[in-house]
Image 1 (cartoon, rainbow, N blue to C red):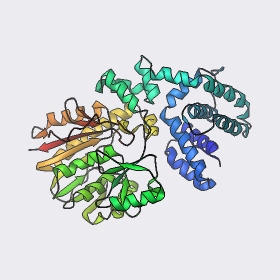
Image 2: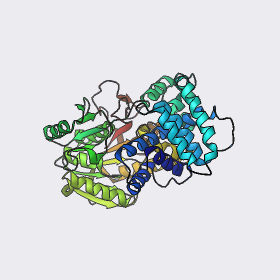
Image 3: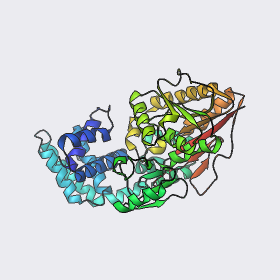
Image 4: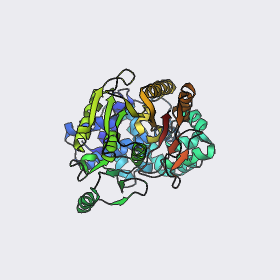
Amino acid sequence: MRGIEAALTVLTSYNDGRKNKFSSETLRILADREKMKSTDITLASSLIYIVMRRKELWEKISSDYLRSKEKLPPSVNMAVLTGTGGLLELRRFSGGVLVNGIIEYLRKNKQLAKYSGLVNAVLHKVIENGEGVLEKFRRSPSPEGRAMWAGIPVWTLPAWLRTWTTQELYALFEMSALPSYSSLRVSPDKLAELSGLLDAKGIRYHKSDISDSLRLNESILPANVPGFAEGLCTVQTEGSVLAASLVRKFWDGGIILDMCSGRGVKAAQILQQCPSSHIECWEISEHRSKSAARELERLGVSERSVLKVGNALSLEPDGETGFVMLDAPCTGSGTWNRKPESKWRLDWEKFDRTTAMQKRLLNRAVTMCRKGGYILYITCSLFKQENENVIAEILSANSECTEVSGLIDWKGNIFRRGKPYGIYIMPSNSWTDGFYCSLILKR
């Protein structure tokens, strides 16, 4: 199966309401089944990412060129969006080849063949006028136009405008247009060995100036990184690295409770950076907990860890806890540029449920932490409702708690102070996603 057909198959499955799997997982299954070439997999994943990143914008641009306003079948609709996005963003692939591939895909299906002329006409309009239209959205005087250009769901604008000034928000939208590249957090004392392997493979990189990471000039799967299987490095965004590094700054010498450990990336980093500490990892998903076990084993730190599967609101720690890290479930708005699909799964109801859960989890963290201990609250969200508002409510309800200042040595424009609590790590480069951190001391 070729890349264009694979992308349309995956995107149609998503658009048709079957959203139980993320598109990347669906593509992996399809690629294995059809024995796709690596070049076709790369093209398909690029097209899927392009469509998902600015889905509303492609819908708006293409709708202006559709003669008929009738509802199109999911496959045809995705053909239009894929062609529109691909023509305007896919720089290293011929536009003519892309259009021909999409038309061929439609003509192969008797029910879709009748739409091939319509789709062809729309995509040629995109070729003629699309670049100019795209620039108009980028410079739009309205937040709605800027949001569509940045790939931000328009319905979320009220939440953004409660967090940032209009000027700050437009700057954030510009950050959202940056390409997303991989960064490698280097395991202790492994820099020389890892650099040698990267050099031998011709993979370009440079040292980060804000974290213990190497920055690549591309996005790469962990399995394709030389030395990854041997534990020399971890594919990890620098925002995540910086957030987890706060544990090392304030704690090294006791038990750490990781309330929502996910796949164990931060837990493994903490154990590598805090050699005198042990960590207890809680995760509600058995699948993710098993992934965490493999991650801790890969990096050789599993002996200093305990993993439990269950709800963090009801599990009990094995002993007294002096440091609790809560990497809380959130909207992931700081990572939407790297993981664009998640934003289209969100609505106000889910948003409200998420913030309610964050408050319950943080209150539980305060309850479990001993006096004199710390609670580190982390999200990969840039919404005030999930960050400062949560901290404010917990501090108000727990008089023995106070926020710790001086979390990070301020450098450049990557950090922003919360209003008034915590700090934001901004997605101001291609290797750093957006994060929020606040450290609470229980007196």
